[in-house]
Image (cartoon, rainbow over all chains, first blue to last red; front, side, top):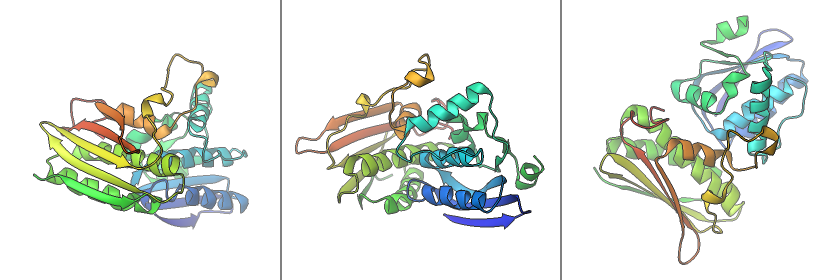
Length: 134
Length: 146
């Protein structure tokens, strides 16, 4: 997986993912997103337009970043369904994480986001520009 | 149409190559394009489970056999890791309060959702074999269009 960072402002960035996101590289996504948060980014768009595949490990990474951008600690990577408990709890509570936004997932990834409940608490946009506009 | 056999090291670095081979095999075996993504997903999730939770970093191999049986695509995956029956993994009970839901493997829950058959048997000489079955057609099963 290749990641490209575009700083929109001191507090906003686009992190574009290209290739495939799986158990071999999902921690890289968490680390990159955490580093951006540490640099002051508070609105992060994950541009998935060139991401061809996402496994459940990628979903855990996305939710971990949602927690980071809410000012919390990311999940333990071994937490398994605990991560999804948190996803579900957020969805049930109506909590929205607008500081982390997903843009342009392909059909398979969109189905994955739906199946795991991610799209119930993270905004998903058709493209990068609409995600930046919020 | 010919079956595909793939022997790989139990390493997360092999996942991308496995997915590529499964996509190729699926096309050769007549799986509809809209159903290939789900097939790739279930194989990837199970092999990841074997590597991370089965071998736990130890050296090992994974053997993947992909074939068509009638209108289904059938994948059999063997390993030499300690016996683990995914049926023993906690299921998702939608009626159970969230805080009471048992922990389990995320990938296994997805496989259950995406496959019509998800069977396990302990091999006589140790290790595991799982059978994953999905329709070759995109319609007709929940998640099959992915």
